[in-house]
Length: 409
Image 1 (cartoon, rainbow, N blue to C red):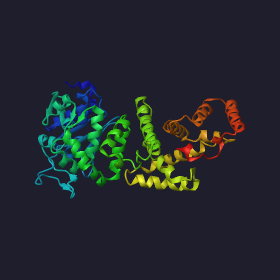
Image 2 (image 1 turned 60 degrees about the vertical axis):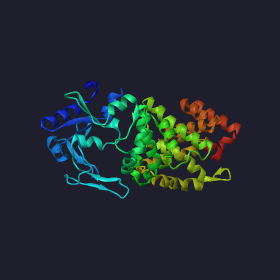
Image 3 (image 1 turned 60 degrees about the horizontal axis):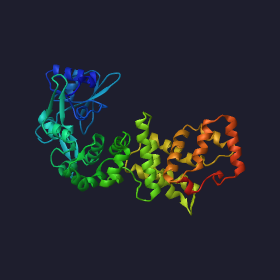
Image 4 (image 1 turned 135 degrees about the vertical axis):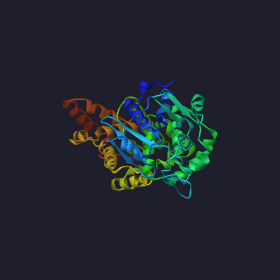
């Protein structure tokens, strides 16, 4: 049923080495699920009854990570494989500790268990499949195979309780349903509505990780639509898509652009997407009687980022990138003298130009500014000069150094 040729040879070798030391070891979770669904896995995780310390002794090129969940990373020059010890999560007499907060969210879980116990503490049945590449047998204790056949996401245990333990499961249910094109079980839908607000208790660092998984894996537009359906979008993005038509259009165009780049094997970065999604906030704050107040614009950039930072912890390395894209939206308005040449040489020009085109599509009418920059960058110096000269002669409204908010939307 599963073709071992589609599995990492390094992962198979780790399973063999662990089993040779008289421990159990299986490929587990998403990689097994994806292989059964005809999807090429991006990574391979392993579960075993060996403790992190025992695994560490078997593999020299490894390290123990984590406090909430102790794991082992085993690596070679090309790959990194994550190995987890079977967990029980219930019996306090076991080695390790289980710590929960008042809402029931798991803070620390290092209680070792058996394979059977481990299966029942995973989130969804389709993620609780254990595959041994040596015997080519699948361990399925929760009807995961049945639910894959039925194409449905089903919770292991009562989703009301499970989502209270870890509210991020609401986001995972949405992401998996779109990735696999599976339906979401009715009980899970109720739990998302009832427990979604608990995402407020999740760290902004973890929510940034979920932001990237949801929006940078080729399903951004579909995931966003389903997030909005369940009212969860506000826990990842501070901009309200219902603010006005332009805001909604811009967010959709930005997400669609990200999906398109991924399908074309082009690079994507959370910095670009964040810049696009937060742009309406920046313009709204900077708008003064129909024009962009430059002082407000520049002063508000950090304010908008801080507001989003409370939701998702955007790494500092992206802050300058985001602000560069925003500032270049103003500089792209200026096409006098040497300014276009300076703008063209800016390291963020291409990203800013792409965002300009997205803004124009979202506005609902074609703007000549994008066409002008398209022609300017692809032609030689002589034509570049003629484009600047012609623009100066025509004295177009868009030749003002900084445009109106209508142009910058």
